[in-house]
Length: 275
Image (cartoon, rainbow, N blue to C red; front, side):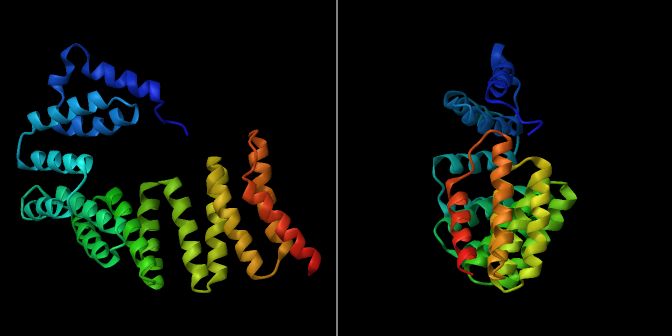
């Protein structure tokens, strides 16, 4: 995608920032933003230096709290300690964004343990804070977690409402990739509750976005879902058409289509022959 930074560009950027004693001019927020970049390019030594710089440069309790949260993320988080940060920052004048991030992280830790109710409660607390601070990007992440919890708890109507709310946030952010993925998720939820026409509408919109972005994985997900919808209606030929379009999309860029697509087309051909 346009605008992405290559690994080599990332390395050059990091070197330019820290060479010649530049580390001493990096403040805590910048250090914390650079740490994931250093990790991504395999500079674990630099990530550690940046972590130390973030801690040394922290100007107040909030910045110190961000450093603590990052350390917990990196070292293996203890949920109670993460929640301590959230509790402290919820009552701090400038701590709302940090409290929201800590609550979100604690929710993810519960989510990883399949503790859906605990994760749901914590992400709701995080979302309330993000609403107050106008953090739309943070809300998009939080709503995704909430919808996942609701789906796991088989609260499908609530999951649909949450994903619709997320879709609105992503549209305001003009996050085309997020919109594409959320439409596919919404389609699956609608299909689960028997709302096949709505599922089809969402999948068609997701597919068009994937084509516009030349996102092969997005095209595959949407086409696979449309094939599912067609199979429900026993429309084997239309199901095959959706999957064949994906095969052609892969061929157009010189890549082989995933084997499961070809296998499914063959299975659909057999069904059509027997129909």
